[in-house]
Every structure is written in C-alpha cells, then in structure tokens.
Amino acid sequence: MLYRNVALMAFAMLLGMAVAVSAQEPQEQQGQEEQPGLAVAEAVITADIVDRQPGGNLEMVDSDMGRVYCWTRITGAQEEITIEHVWYKGDVEMARVPLRIAGSNWRTWSSKNIEEIWTGPWHVDIVGPDGTVLETVEFTVE
Image (tube, rainbow, N blue to C red; front, side, top):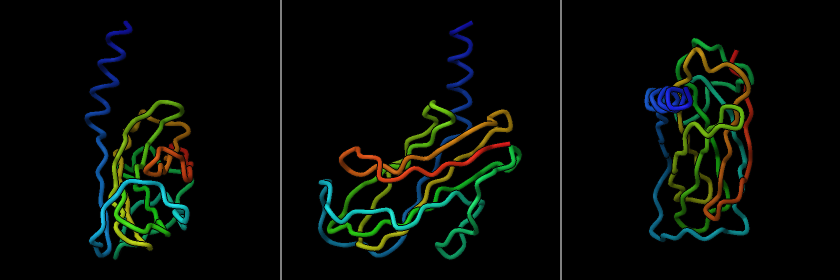
C-alpha cells in the first residue's frame, strides 16, 4: 500500500511539474552569496501574468483552476543570483523551482499545475541563495 501511495504521488508530481520564468535585463556579474539588501518587495499567488505583472492576488484557488503562478519582485540583488520557489501542499514539498535574479529590482515567477484532488492549504517559500526563507506566500485550494 505504501509503495502504491508513493508511486501515485510521484506520478501526480510529474503531471503537475512547475515551470520557471524570469524577466528583466541581465547584468554581467555572477555569484550566489547572500546579499544584505536582498528582499522580497512583493509576492502573490495569481491566475495569470500580463506584461510581467500579476493579474491579481489569490488567497483561495478553485480546485479546477489548473495552473497558478507565484509572482515575486526581488530587490537589492547586487549581482546575479538564484533564488527558489518551493511549492508545498501542507508540509509536503511538491516542486522546487530555481529562478535567476540578475538585477536590483527583478520580477520573476513560477507556475504549478494544481490537480483537482489537491485541496487544502498550500504555500510557496521564496528561498534565498543561502537557503534562508525570505518570505512565504500562503493560499488554499478548495
């Protein structure tokens, strides 16, 4: 029974793989060290992205919506870094998406396909280059 549950979860995760997108202008420097001024200026769960902006802020998501996005604006990056969006259903990690940040005011987003059976509390941790959770965005699938 345990093997079957693990196999079903793996299959569901493959169906709901997350997608990463990054937007702005690149900088020439590269690095992965935490920067003192690095911050999440804005972060929302949304149904769509229009002209690199979120189409709204969702706290409740219908289970039949399909795809949702976590849109984030990062400030204070002094050089190119990578952050992560880590998607959780309850306490179970469902996806980990690396996102390139290459400017001091950078918009980026990832998306997640939500299956109708995945109702309940969700959250996305926005994780800095050193593994520190910079912010958490919560939503509920109903």
